[in-house]
Image (cartoon, rainbow, N blue to C red):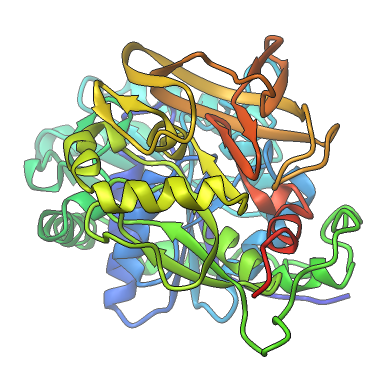
Length: 471
């Protein structure tokens, strides 16, 4: 049995909007500035917060999602991401006890904290309360005895007097106050229809915001006490997740292995087949493990920017277009006709193409009236309705990502619609929470709104790489 001690904290809150991201990102940067190697993590499927975490720490922001990846993989994935680090900071999702709808604690911050045996620091928006804060904290701390709420950071404190009242009230709760932060407009991060504006779209402003968050945390929090609390977490005993182990059939968490698909490995001439992955400001949603899995499966992963690059990377054999905000850049994406044609030609050749959410829109005939790649006989547009939530799905037909009948768990998160919503051969049949078909399978193309974390779907990367054409 291995034993790994990684100091760690989970930053949680009673509800969304309390300031988790500000505090977690500020702590990451403050500890990194102090010379610690900080591993950043985010509970749940969100792509945007990990971008700020990466900016704060210089390390890939990683998600810990017990719904999509399974509870048994949370600790291995955490150990993989935090290997060699002095400290791990885990930002929670929604309220501490909010998880997958109708499934109890599954995928909640509390669930992940218990899986990691990590102390929880509760960030409380104190702007409209004084003594009542003690009742709130007591309730959260006592709700589940297995969740160790070990400290409180008070956010949006109005004055010195307000802080004294809050601290006096919390003296009776038994939960120590580890920080008190004043209202500070400088740390505000702008939002739009799907949450915070991604780091890739803000550059200098994002750097300034993260620096301001760190300064606020340094001024208002007891960093020594927080680090001591993190170091009090017990050793973990699971094996770290290994993207290469799947290829060898080594169990990953629950004994699951690759789905019988042999990875491609190097080509006869010694080179690796090139998988082009869309990036840049329009396509910012990706999980770090996807690139690691593709590389372990034998591919050379090359990133390109559909806003700037007029050609696909040389020798592209397969294409992955993840999520993002193409609706914000529809005119620019449309204006890049050479790349749109290159993508259409690659798809027409039968090469594997995996398009997810934003990628689905990019492959459509048009987005908000602007011509796109025309790979799919469908039109996309912005909508007033937000589609959001976890999904259970089954693959309708064999495709580059999964064999027919493969069951996955994923996540939808978009404020666009595509018409029709499914092709003659849909990508997925949703089985929960409602039954419907969705997406498109056509030749080598798999396009869908569904976000899937490939670490929770063993064999996905191997299957994709095994289907790449050989030179």
